[in-house]
Image (cartoon, rainbow, N blue to C red; front, side):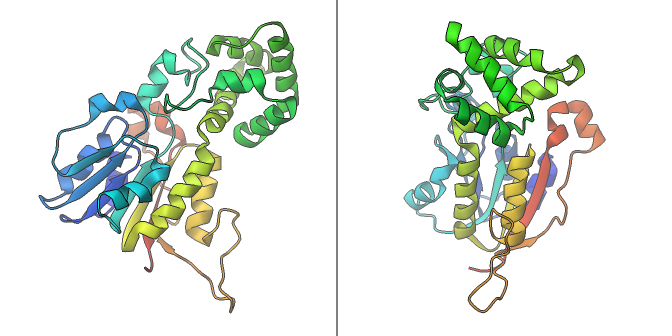
Length: 294
């Protein structure tokens, strides 16, 4: 949904925009195409592997950091308000396709899953060292796995004999718990839960949304692409109700405190043509909102 997401920003030629997930650079390149000479683009990505994808353009500032530091770096570059922000959440195609990163169920590799290699917590550390209670919690909450207790029992039994080191070690334990036709979906849920925990993804997303509200100009656009229900629920609640819980924010007098006007009443989803080219986009949901006030 490249064009739909960048269209959603309503690019002004001299505007200031932020792409908090540079990745392969597709969105940033399209934003730069639409900016004039005086426009600016600040792009974030904590993955060191992104460095080789960065385009040379005087209007682009590349920040090799997690987007939770959005306000800090904007301030460092003398920016107090922006015209639009785009976030394409989740794992990049590059991260999925490199087995050494440990994100994919298709390739054997270290049980890692860190989006930034400076992170000290890996998926291996979690499955080898977390308590049974904490493992059950994260698989239920972040993977929405119904038989989390059974999965954790198998994990703990395995690690008593030998530690988990690779993605294959984990797959061999988890795949025995579901019928063959459900295997890939189940393994994806297991990996999702660990990835979210390793990278504190939901907490970081909350920080981003709060900071985006603070730095966007009135009428500035917020464009977010999510890939699973946990992310999408947070984004939807924040944009529609002003809170992550889904409770409508109100002032002392009971008046609604809405910070955004929804441009997309329902999320946009990929076209059949796009899915034929990129099946990974099948779970993507695009939400666009406009800042109401300063």
